[in-house]
Amino acid sequence: MTTVVDLDAIPFAFPGEPPATGWRLGLIGDPVDHSLSPALQGAGLRELGLHGTYERWQTAAGAIPDRVTSIRLPGFLGANVTVPHKEAVIAHLDGITPLAARVGAVNTIVRRDERLIGDNSDVAGFTGALAQHTGPLDGRTAVVLGAGGASRAVLVGLERLGAERILVANRTVARADELIRDLECRSATSIPLTQAALVDVLPRTTVLVNATAIGWHAGELPLDAELLDTLPADAHVTDLTYRDTDLLLAARGRGLATSDGLEMLVLQGSEALRRWSGQEPPVDAMRAAAIAARG
Ligand code: NAP
Image (cartoon, rainbow, N blue to C red; front, top):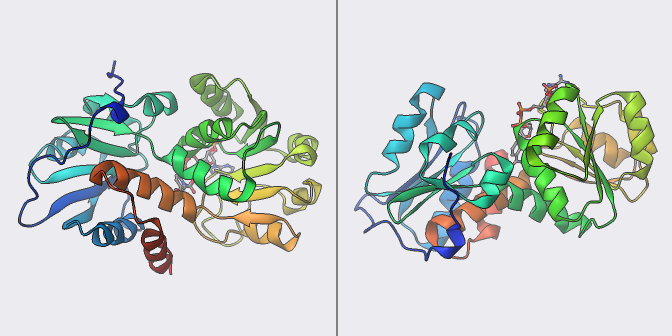
């Protein structure tokens, strides 16, 4: 059982003196080669005047213990964790925040008092990005397509924004059931990712979130585009994929408001940098670097 630690209650302090070569940070995952995080974190470090580097740490599952141990060496400030290691990394940390425990996933590792503490900034990234468009969701219904790792932060985020009803539509319904049970999310219900199920709920939906892996390639749609016609005119469609997906293009073509996943990525990254540096993160510079790196 991993210890739950209130990171906010521990005063910020750098782990020792900065090495001559600069502080080290990095992304633990597999794969990590296309990640935008080195660009956005590099810009953040520069803007804060912090001498350091943010590296891609390609890590196979069997190498997680050694990778985590390396962050304990002098000069390391912490790390981000991405797919598929956000859950597996927890067993190798000294503690996790209550939020990371609730979500069941760590995307940020922070050093405090010689301990490595796991946190989750995906929830803040998702809620911050969505709220820019929708504001609070009190009394509203949201539909989440997908029930994988990212959907965990999405569900907790929608709950925090006040959504009254969350429908989790997944190809594998049992996985959606497990997710809702794990998170003890009382406002959520599972439905199959089918036309028949969605046509029933979309007319009452204010926010539609694509958290499936569908959307990175042209021609991919997580649902039949015609179903978008059943959404209310003021619905917002958001996609965790950080590009203009066919879903977003189809929604915009129908006059619906849309947003992609870049802002979530930027805000989860800026919250991580706040933890590592103890300073207000330079969000605008980080966003500009992420947009430039996306190309
Ligand atoms: P994951 O754990 O692998 O889950 C993938 C989800 O997609 C599952 O619900 C899966 O359904 C569904 N899916 C896969 N292929 C499908 C198909 N052919 N038809 C219907 N459903 C399908 O992935 P994840 O980590 O949750 O990531 C999901 C997406 O979010 C990815 O595109 C990722 O890049 C993005 N993401 C973005 C951010 C950000 O900061 N913007 C952060 C995290 C993730 P089954 O359960 O039925 O297999």
